[in-house]
Structure formats: C-alpha cells, structure tokens
Image (cartoon, rainbow, N blue to C red; front, side, top):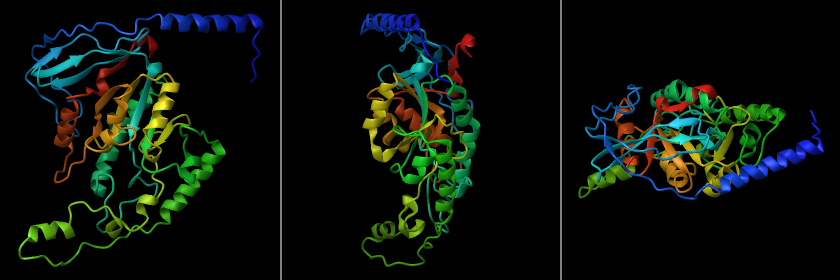
Length: 357
C-alpha cells in the first residue's frame, strides 16, 4: 500500500535522522581497553553441549577479560574465547552487540545426498565430507544445531547468508536471492523445477578403483600415491561435469526469500561492499568445513576477519574427519588452532536481551 507522508512528518523524520547521525559521529573513534585477566576458578569445558559432534575443549587455565565489543543499545550478547600461548591459557570475553548490525553467515551448506538430486558419484566418487554416510552425519548436525540457530536469529539479525561454490548460474539466479538480485516467486518456482531436472539428468557414475598399476622398484611408495591418491575428486571418479552442476543450498536449512546466497567465484570484494552498505559490523560464522572452506573461501573467516568483528560459532561447524567415524576430535583441533587469532563462541553463548525476544 502506498503511504503519503505529510510535510510535517517528512521534516520530523529528516531531523531525527540528522540527530541520530550526529550523535553517532560524536562517539570517540577509539577507547582504551583494559586488558585485565582474572583467573577463573574451576573453569567448565568449552563447546561441550553436543558431544556427538564435538570433543569438548578442556584447558587447565582460563581467564575472564573485560567486554571487548560494547555497542550502544546492544541487544545481542555473545560470550567468546580465544587462546593465548603468552597468557598461558584460554581467555573468555563477554561481548555486547547490536543484532541489527550483525550478519549470520553459513559457509558451504552443500545440498549433497539430501534428496535434491546432487548425489555422491558411485562407486568411488567423493564430495563434501567424501562419503555418503559422513554427508548424512553432517546433515544431521545441520538439522539439529545450525538450522535452529539461524532460525532464531533471522528476524533480528541484519541478514542471513549462505555461501556456495561456483558462479551465479542461470538456475540459482532464479532460485536464490543474491547480492545483486531478488527473484520473484514465479522465478523461484521455475528455478526449482530447472534445478531438479538438471541435477537428476546427470550420470553419477565414475570409474571404479584401479585393480592394478605399475610401480618402480626404487620408489614404489611415490608411484603408489601418485596413481592412487587419498583424495581424487576429479572426473575419473566423479565423472566429467560433476563440479559444473549448480550446487544447491542443503535442504536441511530453511532458506527464506530474504536470505542471500554468496557465490565464491564473485570474490570477497562484493560481499564486503554489501555488508558495509547494510551497516554490518559483526559476523556470526557457521558452516563447513572448519579446517578448509570455513576459513579459506570467499565468506571464510580469513577474509571476513580483516573488516568485521567475527565470531566463529564452534559447535555450528564441522571439520573433515578422514580415517575417523566421528568428527569430534577433528573439529576440536581445527577450532583450537583458529582460536589463536579469532574469537570462538558457541550456540548457547549467543543470547538476546529477554525484553527483545
């Protein structure tokens, strides 16, 4: 419905905006941070809420530090921690954010083996967590932990975003909102039909494992791994064209019309520009895989941490876990290493003011 404002209302709104901008511009650009470390007696294990997916972090020395992020009008409270060799322990830090200046980003929620049609090739193909069973485990993690976390923040955060590999192809352009385009409901329906047809038309069959190959007498180990590596996601086992398919967002999260998909091929620059244009200062980062895409891709923390206050939601992420049935120890190791230079939080540590819920 079109709404006409009176001259009085328009003038009042203009004056309010000017006053708000002036008040914000008068805030001092810097403050002195008092780096007081107070020993925490009998500290509790960190990231211990979901032991099926995460081996709790247990360190003998914990410190409490003063709040680091302190926004005016904060309504989102994020306790976080980092590790310091020099302090010889874990440092826990309260933070007070404005939800309206916070983006929630999920890295690489690939829709693999989830019923949408993009499947792990047989008999020896690999994708995402590399086996069908491990992909299903990751999907259960998404449903149980990541989806409720994102849904609880969607109406309060500045935006919810998902990053995917590749470029913005014609099918996903219709299906998902991007940094530059919002599809209509009709386009979304057409995109969904086209996605199903495209994914299900592919031949998900690659070559079997080699039964024999030649190796030298001098360097048999070198020749063995050269011809039979531990991870080959190429056309031999996945079939040519597998990685050119339009990878969908997993069906294990709820993609709302206002949610935004980020494409790796577009690079970090457009993502940074968009977030800045929306007034985003903070990022709650979830997704996969903790030891790879979560840190290194377009929406990974190595990029985002240069320009935003990034909080890694440790139990809303999974690392790859080769040679193990469980990701518990792999995620623990990846998050612990990241904590040397990044702040880590967990789902239960992200809380809204009660009056704002």
